[in-house]
Amino acid sequence: MHEWGVLWDLDGTLVDSEPLHEETLVMSLETEGIAPPPDLHELVVGMPAKLIHETFRERYGLAMPFEAWSRWRSRVYLERATRLKPRSEAVAVFKELQALGVRQAVVSNSERPIVDINLRTIGLMEPDLITVSRNDVRRGKPDAEPYLRAAWLLTSDSAAITVVEDSPTGALAGLAAGFRTLFWPQSPIQAPAGVIVVSQQDDQIGRAHV
Image (cartoon, rainbow, N blue to C red; front, side):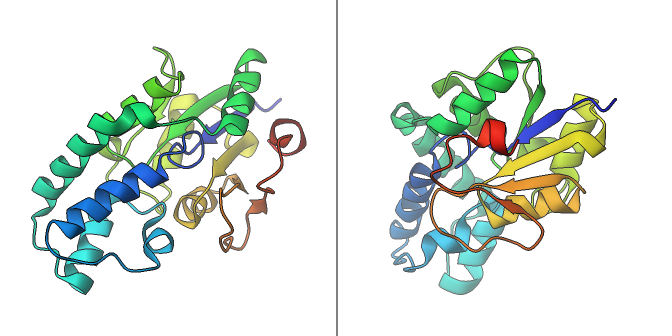
């Protein structure tokens, strides 16, 4: 019998944090006189910080070194994290599965301090919760490594693992790992081929999909 496991993305999936991430990005750009592009959300959603920095350095002339830029954004994010809200439908499913004894883990492209503050803010930080941050792997999403590491830590049979994601970048990571991948975005966005698309209005995701 396969042991069921669910691997959750964090930013945009369990916590409505994308607006705050983008706010800190816009602020960092404006400090250097760079106007944010109109397609900012589509450009960066699900993308790891280092790749975002490289993109804006190459396309728009962002001059701040990555380490300084990353520290600056993290500081601003942590200062404003109290405004974060859970994605209520997803958190309800997480808790429902938790009550049923389903093994779960959280897999994020964010750095460890961001992962921890997000989980604490939405009330999901627990000592035994398995989490994988960008600091814990060599390659972030869309590489398969973050989800493969989480599955290994979860010790669940890979044939019974479901990934839940809100971004194409993260969904590609789930697919690359060979896992059943649900794509549950907060706003209309093109789904990668091979995912199971969940309606934005579907509050029965726990029973109907996961």
